[in-house]
Length: 452
Image (cartoon, rainbow, N blue to C red; front, side, top):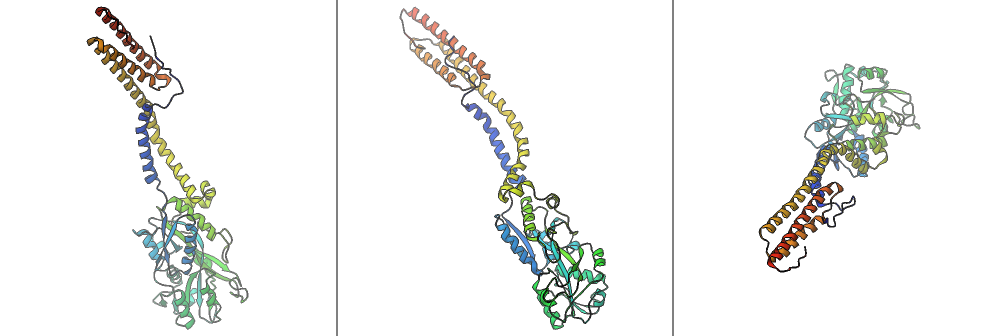
């Protein structure tokens, strides 16, 4: 029996049958990967919208800093001006594209949290109660009946001011309330149009510094500051040290007990996790330093009560940034994080698919081998039914062509038995053709050389 030159080996080129078997699985995997990558863990947006109250003077300044920092990471922060924090909150809860906003703690309670979460408190905003009066104001009750500027409608300042005044027995029924704020309220206080103006602002505010330099104006020193802080959990009792605002002019002239709210960043609960982590990093850079009212590393922190804390922010305040975000640039940590998120569902998809590849491959190889058997059987039937002189060489060439195709197959050793059996049958047909051709020659008394 001649077995030709077929030599099974562990080193062979990847057969096309294997590629045919793997191609459907590869296509399914690629489609699955695309779906998972696109929809299960979508890439972070390149643009984020922040609603900014123009009534709160320091918000725009901080938002501009966030803008510059995010731009360094390829993220555009679009600032959308509003009339106040109440409008900011309503935008976040509507179909508006707004995704985040700065608000004062305590101002969002009446609106409810709904789909909003907090990334934490960022800094103190003191409640500056400045009075045109002869004596120092130690209790808010003494302001009853005076003309008081409480901030513009929809502003966080007015929300906090009315809460404090209301708890002190002051209302629109016994006191004239003016809904003006910032420079308008400061000008009214200087001119005597109002007796008292309430501002919610940072200690570095030029407006506050200018007002406190005027000898006719006094900053309220609240003996009940701790009581107010107990009554309103979102407020803190702070002490403004003597001379801390202006040492040269000794402003304030003595320690002042005052109240402060914290400014917090609230976001929609569907804000992309990568943007959340990026914002937490920037908030630490901007607000992690000391100020007149707080020590270094006091902020950002989990201090607010109006909104639930974002889960990532909660982890950040307890354990710091995730490992990847600590050591990799934003774009790289985002990419690696997404790849890791994809691995589990992708493996769940690929494992059953990969298991089918050997089965499909075996079926394809067997089908190919059966195809050679089909050709061989058809040739054998032709030899038996039509053995003429001019056909003998043709049958030999066809038989050799089948043999060559079998020899060219690149198959693993596990299929050697099937190939040997096939080549054995090819040799049987070759022997049969040689025997029949000799018989034909003898009958016709003529030697016809053949090459098979």
